[in-house]
Image 1 (cartoon, rainbow, N blue to C red):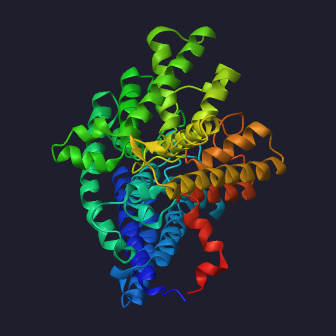
Image 2 (tube, helix red, strand yellow):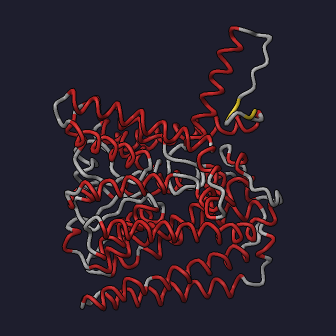
Image 3 (cartoon, rainbow, N blue to C red):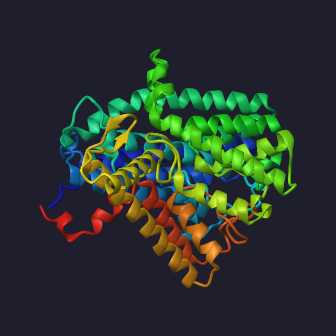
Amino acid sequence: MIDLRPIAAVLGVLLAILGTTMMIPALVDLIAGRGDYLVYVGAAAVTVFVGLSLWLAGRSGEVEKLDRRQAFLLTAATWVVASAFAAIPFMWSEAHLSFTDAYFEAMSGLTTTGATVLDHLDTRPPGLLIWRAFLHWYGGIGIIVLAIAFLPMLQIGGMQLFRAESSDKSEKLLPRAAQMAKGILGSYLILTLACTVAYKLAGMSAFDAVAHAMSTISTGGFSTHDASIGYFHSAAVDYVAIVFMIAGSLPFVLYVRVLAGDFSRLVANAEVRIFLGIVVVFTLLSMVELVRADIAGGETALRYALFNVVSILSTCGFVTVDFTRWGPPTDTLYFLLLFIGGCTGSTTGGLKVFRLAIAGSALVQHLKRIVYPRGVFPVRYGGAPIPDEVVSSVLSFIFLYLACFGAIAIAINMAGFDLTTALSASITAVANVGPGIGEVVGPAVNFAALPDGVVWLLSGGMLLGRLELFTVLVLLLPRFWIK
């Protein structure tokens, strides 16, 4: 049997931290004179109490020797349980969401997806708006640590390529995660502060600047306005968002290197170069389509194309205009972007650029072997050969990713929704993007029209996509629970 004590101890600490941070929206609402501050105080008390209880129950466990099975279970439990407690303010506040919708909103926040069931954001209490943004920010730093410290050790979907240099022993997962988190947190804070200042200089209010900065760096996409970034009608705001959405899409471990004075790593990184290349190519294609369809021209076409490509590719999901009205070619182009995502060790979702690069290299290798059966053609990434087990892991991940996407899309289609809605809602959840395509879940609307069954299905899809599929699905195997 799995020793649950260290899992309970770590989960308890995380819940206690989450509960403590609920005092942030409480203070915001108190200053604004809104009565909802009592809701956050009550939710904080409940969450901290449960967190401390779990910690007391599990503190006798050997937390520093967390093994691989415990790491799998802890990873999944953290997002599932944290989302349940983060949902409390959405139920108790004046939003009065059902548990289904509140859990969806919290899961969307912590997984940095950005899909929402809330409307009339412009008139909502500031505490609620800052709580949504903070969930992005809190989940974002957790995602980075997960991608850099945990998943490489668990060998999820080729992530072993990014195994840290210090140790390869699974029993030392937690101390290593804590060690890495220190440098990453510093970079995360600096980027958030810089983004806040930039938004303020671009014309946002201080409140909007803080809320949008937390959503931008975490590539989440929650806004304080129904019209999202489009509310501001500002080219300066658009370009600030573009710069920092890209910043949130790059490996945060490289920022630690930059702070140490090593700028070459950021430029030399193969995944960063490929990511920026994808941005350029898709922006040019989108811009050509805008000009061809006589929708926009000149600088406006460039800004619209660049903003939407970066917003979708980074899985941030901010919106300036309803791009679904630009015609089928643009819909197809942006639908493809929904799958890709950003770089490893960033806050983005999606397949990740490195996996697509390895899959492409494996395809080229296969074609060469057809022509030259006796030739030796290793799969390469960043100029270095890749072991066969990594290639197999990546290809297995991509297959499972597409299978999960297809299964969720079929289920939504069977629930009575059109194919466009089913496909885009499925991939936007699994890839943690936010807005989909179409009249039901497109960028001009939210997910409030979906029935409870579909909402729970999409909540599960967000969890699967954020935790890299295997981390969750392995828990369904009976053998996992047998020592």
